[in-house]
Length: 262
Ligand code: ACM
Image (tube, rainbow, N blue to C red; front, side, top):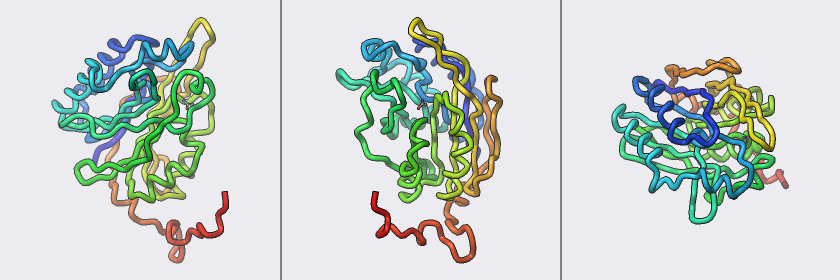
């Protein structure tokens, strides 16, 4: 299958303009699965919870999410998009798996990063693996990379590809994901944004370098740091089925959970 990402620079608070940009970039894409960054519609650096709520989208009543759904229908493909999800008076840092028939699943980021804790609620739904055209995909969002339990849980539940919308500001994740993929023998597509969110309360620069990593921990492709990139490769998700790292070591069967107390 062809799978990849779109790395771009969302404009803060310009949800409709960001949606338009995504549609234009992905209109002619010939990939079955494309992953977009975290908070791809709203931008990232909210002043406070009140501002976040104003920019959040209720996926059941959002013209912007509807446009992404229409794009998937038109192209008969799947998009994973990070977005700020409004649910009653709360908002979540979420990721939606969308296909030709609409939203398949929404994941709510479990591990909020730094000041996100002041603006959003932590995820309240268990990790889940979904099937698209017989391919098993899991979702996690950005800072979830620092919790090895997330990829492990998704991989142990059969995920072949981890879709990883991100807005990374630290420099550790891209390299760490090579290990996450190797130790779980799973593909990961990290779609990061680049550029700056320059706000009155401060500025944040994002690191780009979106990437596709194989179940052998090999970097298939990494984008540049501060450049727009729409990239996809031919990958074989069944490579994630082989959990052997040596002839005598199946990384899942060799686990000794009875000795792990944490
Ligand atoms: C992050 O979780 N956006 C760093």
